[in-house]
Image 1: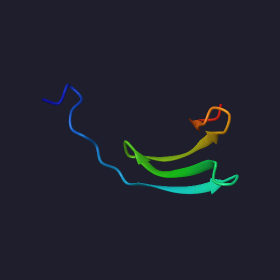
Image 2: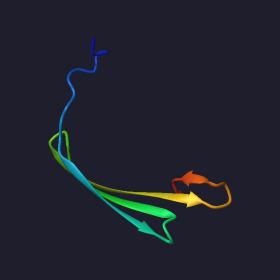
Image 3: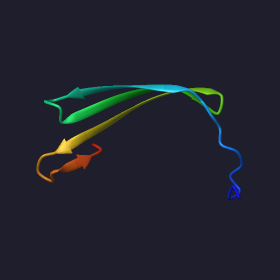
Image 4: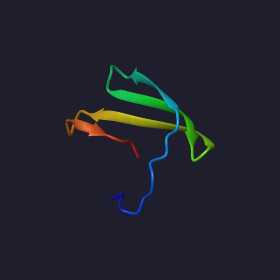
Length: 58
């Protein structure tokens, strides 16, 4: 049973990850397609020294 969502859709994409600021931040640039349309995006994940965990800035 598919839960009403239908068949999964497949697409190709790539992500380039770079570490910054002494390895505490990871910046990812994404490029690919979604539902047949071009897609580009960026994400940032950082380590918060005061909270001692990973967080997303913003």
